[in-house]
Image 1 (cartoon, rainbow, N blue to C red):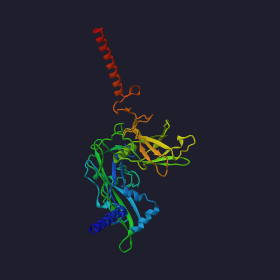
Image 2 (image 1 turned 135 degrees about the vertical axis):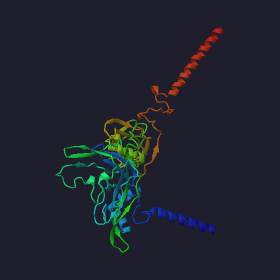
Image 3 (image 1 turned 45 degrees about the vertical axis):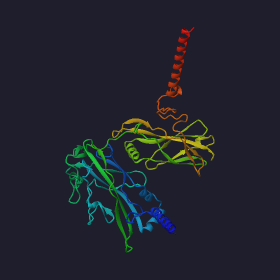
Image 4 (image 1 turned 90 degrees about the horizontal axis):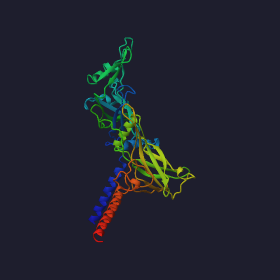
Amino acid sequence: MKKKIATLICIVFIFTIFTFSVNAEATDDGKLPFMLSAPQNTDLTWLGGQDSPTSMLCSYEMSDDMSSFFSRDDKSQQELFEKFKMKDAEIIAQIDWSIDRNDDWHYTNYWNGSGSYSGYDSNGNYRLGIWDEIRGQAKPDGFSSTTIMRGNILTNDKNAAADSNKWWDGTGLTPGLKNQIPTGTCSFIPISKTESQMKIDYSAHTVYIRVRWDISYRGENDTGILSRSHYYSDWSETAAYGKDAPAFEPFTTDNLPSPEPENITIKNGEKPEAHFEMELSDEFKIRLNKLFVAGGKAGLDVKVKLKGTSAWTDIPCSLSLNDTQVSVPLDGLTENGSISSDDEIILCCRYHIEQYSYPDGKYTGDVNSLYCEMITVRADAQNAEVSYAELHTDDNIDNNQHTCPVCGICPVQPLGLCLFIWAAIVLAVLIIIVSAVIKEKISRKNP
């Protein structure tokens, strides 16, 4: 009896834990319908003078839980608002910066919200410097990117407005940039008789950034009155660009991974398609983001064919950091453009990179990854069965590295034969020749 009771208690306990984990939709204090976490995959790149001589591009991502909430349609989002007694919610990014040290941050209490907006004191006076970014982009899917540290123009025109240089000199309330950056960091390039453009040599200096989320929402307080509140995430990991930051690493055949398609299904009908998702590692996404900033492109070279046929159909597909869903049209596999639910489709793909050096933007050529494993998918839209064939052994798959299908080691195969097979043939011929010579000598001695 005691064992039965103990078993029942364990079952109830496990069920309680499971139920809690499924319904855990709030912050630690339960006031937001998601877990508030720091931005992920933070990255920093220089725009190469495209926006201004000093402009940088800061990129970052939401966690899956936050992305799921902010990607909801209006109806399902409103249901959660009602559950948490909220009327609306807004998310923006705050980006803090430091030059030549990774601890000389410019965050102050004025970055925190006072009523509806951040950056103001209790009297409604704005208190932040020109590079203190508190309203950065916040997209629910993929990377968000915000241009920061724009270099302004300094004027010595006596007829210019009195506040023309306040971004540099500051006011009694806002800090001037000249008091926020280390001495000797920047220079000014004359662009006219009265104006100079700010410039920073990033080969001699390093910029560090960190990012956090600012969540503002209207909700009912304990007395049922609507009020606006702010929640702030932790700061992200630090990203850097410049003298002491990791150098930009171009893609090569050695460091470009093979694709990893997942959740492959077939949509049958008038225009059949294969659908799959791309699983991109955090490191790969950051490198792709740098590639795109430098003007490069990334895509997928997809090969498909019906099982039992020999001809592959090549289909180029785009690759986006904001949408990892890939659709591959299959109507070209047959003459009538349709496929049977009993058909099996064989599919494989590789990354294709069109690359430019960074930040000068010079074209450096295309790079291809190895093809992924060949995947056989049964063309049943309701229940796609996926099986993996041997790696790179089918016909007409050029993988840029002609690895031997027999031993997997030798890089070349004369007449299509493995070098080890050639070695065995040569050895056999040598044995035959040596045996014939020995036999000839014996026959001469014993006529």
